[in-house]
Amino acid sequence: MSDLTTEILKADAKGYARASAIWCSGGLVAFPTETVYGLGADARNDLAVARIFEAKGRPTFNPLIVHVENVTRAQEFVEWNDAADRIAGAFWPGPLTLVLPLKPDSGLSPLVTAGLPTLAVRVPEHPVAKALLTEFGGPIAAPSANPSGKISPTQANHVLVGLGGKIEGVLDGGSCTVGLESTIIGLSETPTLLRPGGLPIEALETALGETMVRHSTADPLIAPGQMTSHYAPGASVRLNAETLNEGELLLGFGPVSCDLNLSEAGDLREAAANLFHHLHALDAMKATAIAVSPIPQHGLGAAINDRLKRAAAPRD
Ligand code: AMP
Ligand code: MG
Image (cartoon, rainbow, N blue to C red; front, side):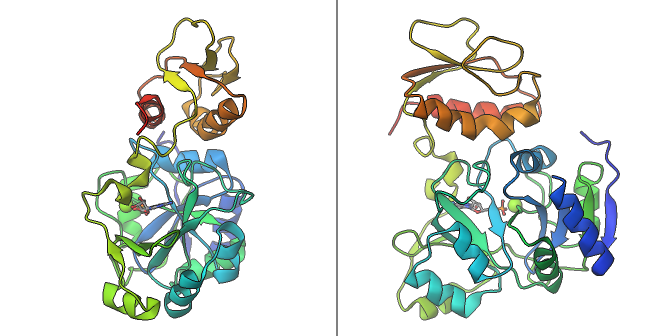
């Protein structure tokens, strides 16, 4: 989809109000943080989050970082702990993302965490990001505002070149100062460096009072959305099912008679928004075997099929 007019918004009260209104109506607005420009959407809105993946052309549903205004807001969505307190106390707001257990009643779209039980959350320091988050008053899911596989944007113009026509707006707040992505630390269990970034590790370890486990970039943990075992339903999964076998429940797509339909209209954005909800629901229905209708491979279909293939893979 590339038929939108991307509004260029100014970093003033009018621009913040407009960006917030776009977010409230499920639209996408890119905005500056101290690391890079983020492509933001309301993290509670399934369709809006699906559109992030669509606009970026991401071939997988990897989990997104949720941006909030302050620690109190972060605590609405994750189970807080002492290590988080020490690290956030020293480095938030700033170029640091914490991965913590997701609260069961967080209200966030499961697409944000790619179905994981943990959430990556950050309080940015950039004055424009802060003003926008205050104006909006809710959680904003935001990966870097570039097409998948391209360089992260550090100016509004970079965003326009990559995503112009695919998103509703970009808030122009000048150049990003850090230009590196946020450092990501996992604090669900043993403190673990998941991604080096804008903050030096040594400073983090000093605040933490201990050394962190470091993950090499080759480690699958660094991209948890890639792990086959991480979100698989209890049932077996059979893809491209044209007919139904004995004992199977059908996860449909398009105008088919089925147990749950990802999108009766055959809309891939709607299907992406429903994907994790329906997998959970089939689990709750105690499905032992799930058959899935064929889903086209274009647009968001690639990411949907990727996720379903992982669900269908043998369990670790
Ligand atoms: P980006 O999309 O460029 O902002 O990168 C987001 C990064 O956060 C990716 O490396 C993700 O793997 C990581 N991430 C997001 N959520 C989680 C999570 N729940 N656990 C571990 N890493 C995460
Ligand atoms: Mg990126």
